[in-house]
Length: 247
Picture 1 (cartoon, helix red, strand yellow):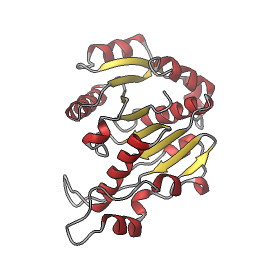
Picture 2 (tube, one colour):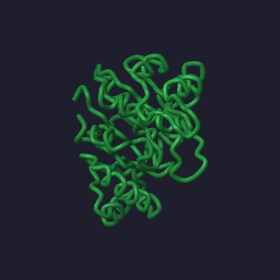
Picture 3 (cartoon, rainbow, N blue to C red):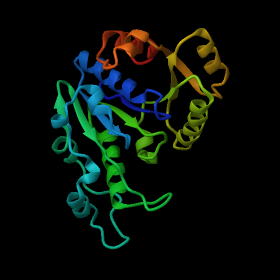
Picture 4 (tube, helix red, strand yellow):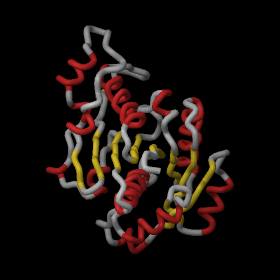
């Protein structure tokens, strides 16, 4: 339990960042050390966890000089396994039991582009998943971009966040296929933004082979508060109940 590794993904806007933050806060409240990694280009995990602008860590992809030195880039050639073991402690920020790391955005010249920045981020994530003792929670973009095959085999739970609509389910189906190809151990889904039994029935009927482990109801009081964050007790209670397979 102390070394659990969790990757969270889903269609943009499905609520994966809120769920990632909620999980980090739940584990932190239990006295466990957590590494929270924002691997989504639309980085919002820091704000959701309550980190102010001045408390946010530097984006790893912006460490151009270090990446160049560690990958030994010469033209189109560079190391795929650069030294990264010192990066998590040097380029992260802590708040209580939570250590936050922001991966940042890699500009790709084309589909399937492999570049030193991408190789560096993959090596870093692999190191954290395999060698760090903390609970690791990764807020990912809609896919498995940052997960290499070795890293994927260290993922204990791959959580896809669903909304009750066909677009979200289409995205989830594509993500599951990618995750299956990487042989990730356990792929589950959480149904989010549930307003009625009809929403839940729709998701269960159209899950397309994805195992839905729990559901989170839409809370109008939270929505109307505008500024509510996952630290809210109502959110944490609902998330804990939905993720009953993760104590």
